[in-house]
Amino acid sequence: MKVQQVHQGRLKSPFYARLAELDTVNEWHQWKGYSSADALYCEDAEYFAIRNATAVFDLTPMTKYRITGPDALEFLNRFVTRDMAKIRPGRVAYAVWCDDQGQVIDDGTVFHLREGEYRLCSQERHYAWLMAATIGFDVTITHETEEVAALAVQGPTSFSVLNKMGVDGLDALKPFGLMHVDFEGSELMVSRTGFTGDLGYELWIDPDKAEALWDALFAAGELFGIRAIGTHALELARIEAGFLAAYMEFLPADETVRTGRSRSPLELGLGWLVDFKKPNFNGRRALAEELRNGSTWRLVKLDIEGNKPAHQSYIFANKKGSKGEIGFITSAAWSPVCKQNIALGTVRAPHGKAGDTLWVEVYYQREMHWSRAMAKATVVDKPFWFPPRRGVTPPGPY
Image (cartoon, rainbow, N blue to C red):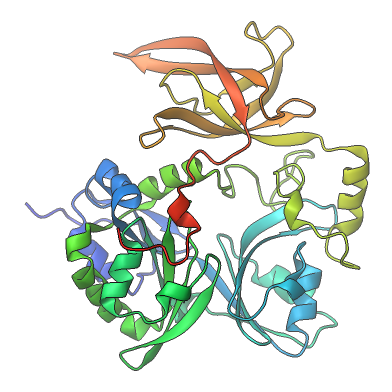
């Protein structure tokens, strides 16, 4: 029986036809105007493709901006908190940008494509903010989301799949590196980046070559367990890796209304991305003051007892909760690969230091009956999932 396709979203990715052929559950959502799959057949199978084989995710809807011009580097150094002068051509940097109060607007990746040429990728759209920030700089901002098709190719066999597909030079590509190769007469950019915390790559190409790239990739990966995946499987991998997501771990500062609902990089555990040696960047004065006086909030990774995910739960300093809640869970899951009940959350400082014991109020349902339990939670300072292959160059066959 063929499933009738009823999709949200107005735009179709260049890979949409290939994804629709695989779809058996008809679960889609809108991602910045594009139809994006929540799942294609089985979330569990898709998740285990990430951890045991090769998973392919359509990244095309991710917002992409090309930044060029004589002042491109100076502009980026003013815009983001880290020192972009240290990011050489052929490298990729994780970065955050803030408002004047030092509150995070978004996080993303900056690709130094060539000398003086950059690509900024983020979950949210920031064209108006970027254009306002260009005043005084000789720089050009081009919104190129629809002009670049992109795939995330993630998992332990991803290196072997791309090698078999004929991607030259992959042996020397280090984490957060990028290179350009030829694919059927078009430029294919390969970056060793991803959102799974595992070995993985991202492929960037002209939309006209998207289906040809998909077909070549899946032909090469046939014996390596390659599978297309949706956002639900990717979300579980994200939590295991301890990565942040907008609208989960933080709200974009330019969208919050109530005071205290946004977060600074220091409160999100991203102090290593803030370079106070730079003379000026958005939010520098406010962040320097916060560094002197201390932060209000602290992002934590929690290893929680039991196997009931602590979705949207309050966090307490003691089991009885007698002192009131000190924070809340932002993302939670049972990790199949770690065999742990894991979560990300935000708590009021000074709580939440590594090794601290906290308590989480967990609600769960069995046969229409809701139960409440106070579960012990330990604050950890490392990602829940960080396999050695993630940082090895070359990764080697698997």
